[in-house]
Image 1 (cartoon, rainbow, N blue to C red):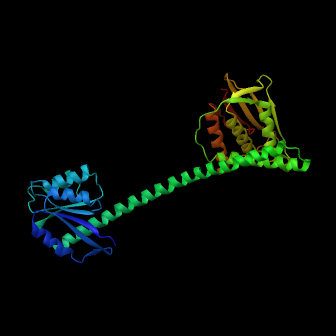
Image 2 (image 1 turned 60 degrees about the horizontal axis):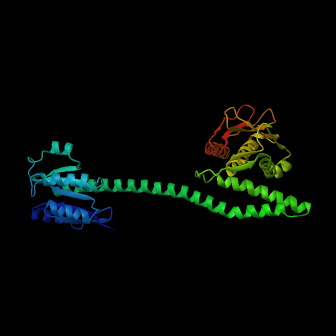
Image 3 (image 1 turned 90 degrees about the horizontal axis):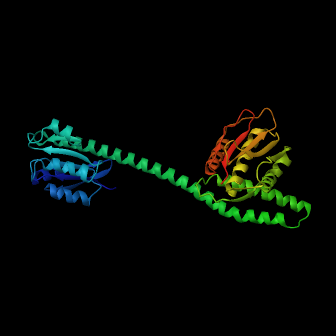
Length: 349
């Protein structure tokens, strides 16, 4: 076991000898005590630099100067910025440094008079100081471990999300190519279902990586985009027996300028959230000009008059991701109204 390092600073050799005799063979919590001796403040400064793990310093007040011990306390606390090491002052001249003033003005942990100091009193003070040092170190270690545990967990999640996105990107391309091939009806349906599932999986993984990458603006054909989104949810709508339809306001241009990746993610996420509230009701997506010039209002509404509102960790994650996407598209997410409609306003770039 590593020993407890105790620095003894005194200009009297006899004090060092008595201290060594008292602590010879003594252990605290099954760890021996290693005494490190310094005959002056200057020597103590050197040893403190060489041994940053010193747990306790026993300091004489009067050495080469009348207040050398107090100067050493200031050096430890303010120049070394060491708040962990415990400091006990021992003095044979109480008049040079009255206890009441020293305790108030200096960051020390105990004050002992050599004239009244017994072996048992010194042992008690040292044990109390070492116990305090141990508790401080344990508290710091636990805090550091908590920080290290939390940070890597978040970092690992981000790394996993990016790795998964890298793996699914080629799969998406392959399933898209399958749809473009001349397949028999059964194979074509399977390819459509596969691509739709890949699209939704990709969008879900993207929610784990919320890094704010710069927008990449480009032309987006609204009708083609909505047809693609409908195909993404077609397998589930067929399976569960509900319909998904869209309407594009005829005053909107056929093509808009925006971030094609983010608007696709926004639509998929909004519909995913609506599906959870719909209870198998039909859904309708509407695109129309917003009240503010240069903005697009995207609405996902439920045909059922009695939507089911559920609040789970997943719905909260979807709402959070939806809000982030709206912000990244320089818009805002409106609260869901009583009919269950989700309204998102985005800026047309």
